[in-house]
Image (tube, rainbow, N blue to C red; front, side, top):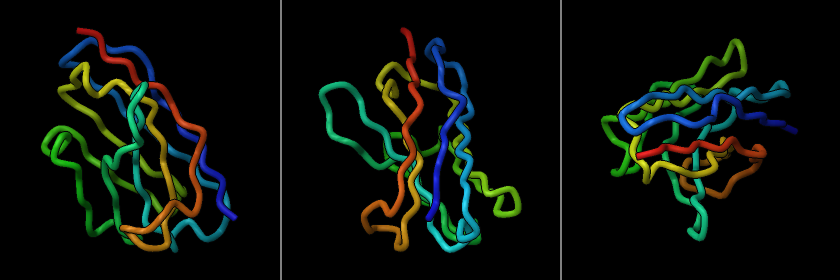
Length: 119
């Protein structure tokens, strides 16, 4: 069992930055690929970024590539999403999720944190 709690969301102006954090409980954190997904009002949930179990491999959605950086600290059971050059279209609830395989369904997902980018 893994419990995930996101933090770090908020209101920021376009062009600004935010750093999201996701704290995981449970002794199997290192067994999972960790993923950030987001859901904007009226839209489907979409993939943002994922990181491998060791942190050596990352992949990003085209819409955030070059602006967002995912990282993890397995010793602290934490995963992060550094978001720079934010745009109004980045406004969404951001969720971290644990997956057994990178393209699979979420084994566990947090409650989400709201990110609002004003123009």
